[in-house]
Image 1: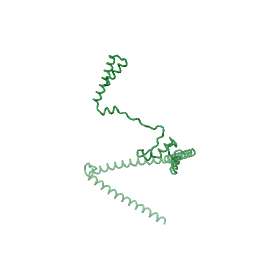
Image 2: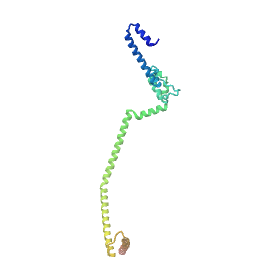
Image 3: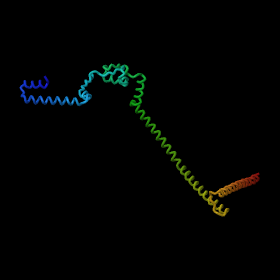
Image 4: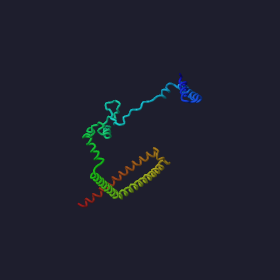
Length: 240
């Protein structure tokens, strides 16, 4: 006996009319046929995914999570002392961590105390540091004012020297200009035409003139020296 026939007989027994029973039976048969036809058209992988019913995760949310240090799956950062301190701070004795090993060593304790003294000194030390900084600042101010006063005292002489240098440089430039004009005039008189100051003839003439002037200066110096000696000798004779 088919399932459709069994359903029809059930509907007859329950007192449902034959027309209503036939209508319900035709709907159920069409629905069953449509699902069967759809399953035959879909790939097996899609049907398997659609029928997949994953098992629920079994999470233990009551007991604390204590990593297994011997396991290779445990990350390395969960095997450090820092993580042990975190576990002990969160779960206390339930973490299974010995609090004795969480206490820093003597060397580490000394480092922490040094950092504490450096970054969080006592009030007395802070006041002393402020006083020392103020004294150092005042000392620098006094030295700066002293340097400024010494520089201001030297300022008139520096200004006079600067003006003297400017005058001497200007005078020297004028002398060089006059000398250049005089040499050009001498070159024109000697050669009978204007000479380029960059030419070889002009440079040779200038060298010859400078040599002659040097000889004249030496001669004048010698004559002056002889005159001084001559003036000294009669004075010595008269004193005797």
